[in-house]
Length: 232
Length: 116
Image (tube, rainbow over all chains, first blue to last red):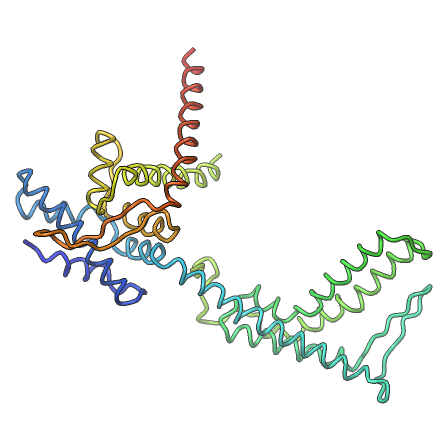
């Protein structure tokens, strides 16, 4: 009788699982093959025919290995995906956002006012901190580079570089929606223009500058696989 | 229509396979090979599981807490992993049976209407 455990080990390993779990799975599948083989021999098949038939029940052993790995270790795969998002998106995105916010805060110190430009239009004044804006391409480059180092794909790199203005846009939009609920002496049209000017000054312009800096790190690496092929 | 077929096909296949496994385990603990044989026997050979179709599904069901596998050493026999229906699996089986019964009733009605 063939050594079914040896056959299963040869065809199914290595599985990216803990050694104990891998051993259990191999033992279980070897048991199944052995049961099938014994049944076939009892039914009158020759040993060779029984072995061939038992092995033919698996059309693609590589596919079975992948399926087992996915099924047996869904938790590990989920953890991997969560870690991947944390390393390639949230960590660089939050750190570069904090850096951008800190820099802005430093430039806003009243005792050492940074040069800035007012945008007077109707009742709306937008302060543009030129010195801060000049730093943004560097910060964007840092976010995209960090994300790329952590294996981030294009979307993660873009988001890691531009998380700060994206977050700010959400806050501005939420504030605007909340403000709409309450009666206000300023007309809706002026408030809408104000919102648009703020979005332009605090979201679109910084986002553009951050992504400008990130641009060299958004290109696909030579050895990088396409996203569809690297879904797991 | 093609994308719809692609998306529904595997779901139906997996759903029916889960129902089959949970149903045979509702009668008592079985090891993998016994599960496959029991399904084949009870469906008179209409449903057949092989090693490649059974174990990935069993491991997924175990991860979801529907079945529980434990190694047992029967006297004079090989050490085997027996699967039992867990409480979550029992809870899942009741609506699953009803859903499939409804689906078959609907298909029957459709088939009768087509013949009429």
